[in-house]
Image (cartoon, rainbow, N blue to C red; front, top):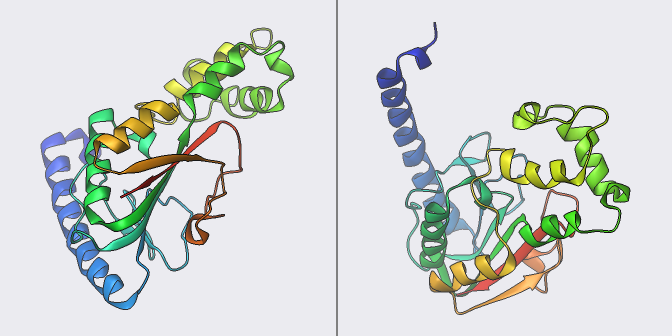
Length: 232
């Protein structure tokens, strides 16, 4: 037996731990804002710790601070110049993503920019209609290296040797990695505008006209990544 076999105790302990971690995050955000003229916050940092940024994640580590993106960000309004989220927003439900967009808008300074990178629904669906999608290296490599290998949830739908098809590639982006919602450009841009941002623009992966937002992604640049920058 583990503590997870006692859900009431487990969730109470988790709540207390998160509360303690959040107080630490709040303290370090204050210190960061005092010491940085150009303030930048990253959400869902994973292993991509960016120099000069306030890096956050649901799973805190050294110099990566705890943040639950579905809750209020413990930072003052108009305090950050830039915000960045890479392959993170698809891991929370749509209503939580809407709340997060409003929180980012709140903490950004006027003219501040939020860069969002997430799987691109359009290009995943387009792959299905390619003339010979299994000749697309990205499709075939994903099926053979990740899905057939049973990565995370893929073991539940991995194809047999004679079953490989692009259908597995398309389904994977919905069923794997604990994804909750996959955006296309129109839906993501409209959500950001609804959150109060004045404008949005589509960008190429790892490219930006803003130096602070260029070349900061950990994922290999790909047409299967949607990148939107929203300006407050």
